[in-house]
Length: 117
Image (cartoon, rainbow, N blue to C red; front, side, top):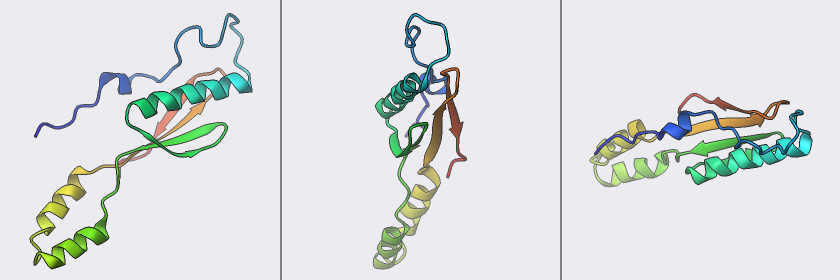
């Protein structure tokens, strides 16, 4: 099993395509900033992320699922603790990533990554 590589596009800054704001070079208004945030959220959704929470100015995206420890504890008891090995591997391998996306006054998307859990 090969470790999953992160595509290079995830490491790039998440910015809308050139000309997204229209012809003017002035900073975007509130409506344009919401459109940029919508664009950034849609790009992350296309890459496998899910929206955890959303407001007009910020979106929190999450990728991955937490381990169901209650289910694995029950399976461990039923299998006389043989399932503990699988449970330990899933706990180490399975990661949940979170990122908060906001759009600043200049229309740039700012992504703040939470520590991996």
